[in-house]
Image 1 (cartoon, rainbow, N blue to C red):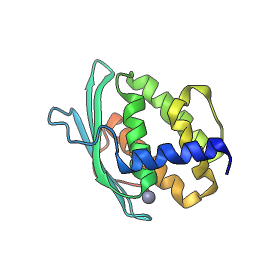
Image 2 (image 1 turned 60 degrees about the vertical axis):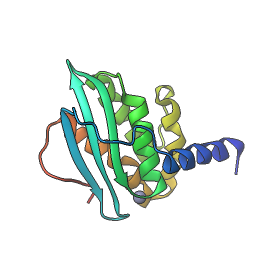
Image 3 (image 1 turned 90 degrees about the vertical axis):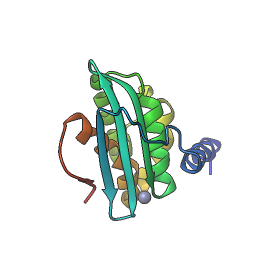
Image 4 (image 1 turned 135 degrees about the vertical axis):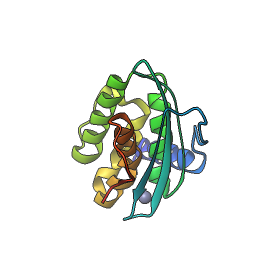
Length: 146
Ligand code: ZN
């Protein structure tokens, strides 16, 4: 394993074990449940949106290290961003984990690039993001990767 991969692994394990922004937000303007039946990952995403800016974002849930780390890194990456910027980051992140297309602006999210080699894990890595998208598009119902 290269040094970079080892470092990526470390960040994923760290965020998987100690997810950041892991609490419910009472004042959330959006709240959405997401489920990945393939792996058993479940999460609830909370979002405070004001004037097209994501003022606060958090989540709660249970699941594998990849799903928890991805949700944790997502909340860190999107807090304070505009909805437009968040959609762009989602598109870039999706291209990274499904096509291996890396862009500079992904920052720490790049640690999840390795999941492209494990197709079943892509759903773990994108669960939080699909849940986010459903929030932003104000879809109703449970988000499922299946
Ligand atoms: Zn999973």
